[in-house]
Image (cartoon, rainbow, N blue to C red):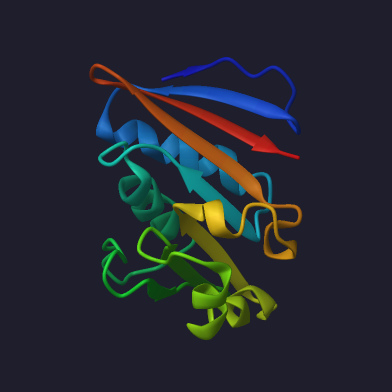
Length: 148
C-alpha cells in the first residue's frame, strides 16, 4: 500500500494492492473523524469490502453485507451505530425521503456510509461529508479521499 498524500484535509490518495490493505484505508479515514462517508466506484470496486474493514475498526461484530436490497444495514459498534446505505435503486430525493433515509443522518452517535450517493451528494445531508472514490486498475484499487 502506498500513501501519496498531498494535503491531509483536502485530498489523500492511497493504493490498495491486497485485501488486507483496506485496513490502512479504514484507519486513514477514521483519523478524519467522519460522520458521513460517501462512497463512489463501479460495481465490484470494493465499496462494501472497505465498509467491512471500517466497521470492524469501529468495533462492529455484525457481518457487513451489501445493503443493495435492504437499502440500509445497521451495525452496532462500541459507542456508535453504523448505517451502511446503498442508494443505487432509489430514483429520486422524494423516494429517499419517503424511505426515511434522512433520519439516520440526524442521529448524533451515527456514522452514515453511503454507496451510490448521487441523490444526496449536493444536499444538506452531505455537509462536511468525506468522499471516497474507488477506481480499479487491473488488480489494484486507487482510493481518493477528499473532504470539501
